[in-house]
Image 1 (cartoon, rainbow, N blue to C red):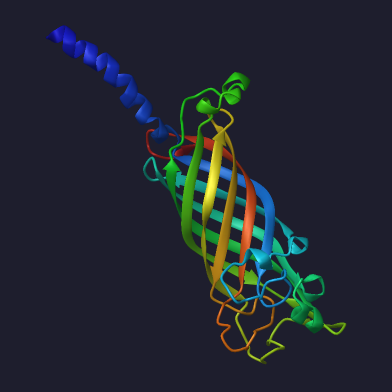
Image 2: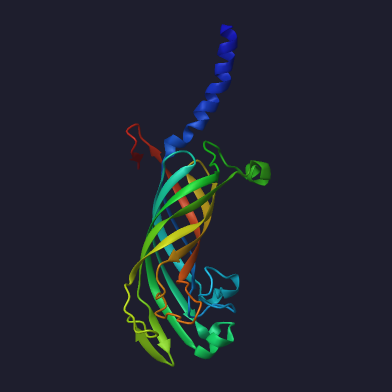
Length: 257
């Protein structure tokens, strides 16, 4: 009986040890680059701007702008993590390049810097693999290619300062030239999206993350469409390439730099 129990323990202990490896690397620092795209009243594609939360037909890839960010992640449990992020990008839109005849006739444009701070919660649909050495031979086998897949949602604050061009005349900031309404240039948004993360080695990950920001303002482009039935706020999306470095957790629970 003792031999049987000893044999069972030999089988179980490595599994338990492997299952707890995530606790050794609770902390992560990350940075990356990507691009942003704006969904609002000015610019866009052939769709009707502002008529829906997101319309694929309303994407103007020519209006995409680079984005840069840094952040940190903390794992609460194996599948759930919190992430703080600081991001800078530029958003813009130009009716001239829109595929929509009505907006082309309006012929207005805008651009604005955007500085965002966010806190998001992540849930891993496909768990991350720990303690594995990634080699070229492993990558060749799709069965051994283990990609951490996660969903995220949270809250963000962002500042913006739009500059609009109408008939060759530049308008800097508020109030809105379309309605005359004043508005705050610091607003809140709800970030939601999906991410993929692949372990290059035990400490370094590379990933891709797509997210949309559902805002509570219609003035990012300094324009508010007051046409009947249009109640949508401005939104923007981000597609980012992320580099992550894991920090070992000390016995006191703090990160070891």
